[in-house]
Amino acid sequence: MIASLTGTVAHVTLDRAVVDVGGVGYLVHATPATLSSLRVGQEVRLHTTLVVREDSMTVYAFADADEREVFETAQSVSGVGPRIALAMLAVLTPDALRRAIAAEDTAALRRVPGVGAKSAQRIVLELSGKLGVPGGEPGNGGAAPAAPTDQDRRDQVVEALVGLGWTAKAAEDAVGKVLAEAGTDVLTEAEVATTLRAALRMLGGHRA
Image 1 (cartoon, rainbow, N blue to C red):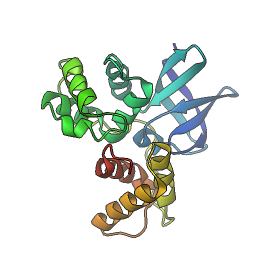
Image 2 (cartoon, one colour):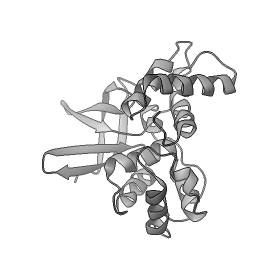
Image 3 (cartoon, rainbow, N blue to C red):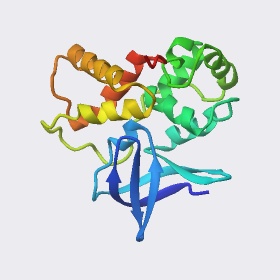
């Protein structure tokens, strides 16, 4: 198992990155929060887990060990694979997920793409007592985010939402509403991860 990677960030998008380790580029999938802490050309250490399937070997990367452990534990639930587990951590931080499980807050879980009412109930039932007690919100762990720029990044968030299954119009409307509520017209790079999370919560499981 590949438990961690230490190398130079070669490429970053909203759902994956490439880390150059000794001349070998590792493609890793990660949450928006983890990816938002990465900068091309910067040295980084990521906690990873390798998911092996008959036709693929996929590396998932996390800024801290807690996020990785929650990702791995979530997959113990029947019907929850790596894609849904990663989506859970895109919408909810590890501690927010712990609180949702402890409070049996299925509404919070239904905001995750691919999680319906029945699967939310199953997640609460099967993860109860497995994730530990909520503490402080974990930090990003990796490199500190760079200072915000004035370049508008809303297209990146729209692209990520479309990739998760929503239509372009629904994605654009959700991002527009999030920015309107924040009282801004420009989405900076530093705000991409939080805006994506807010848009996911607003859209919930509906892909109309």
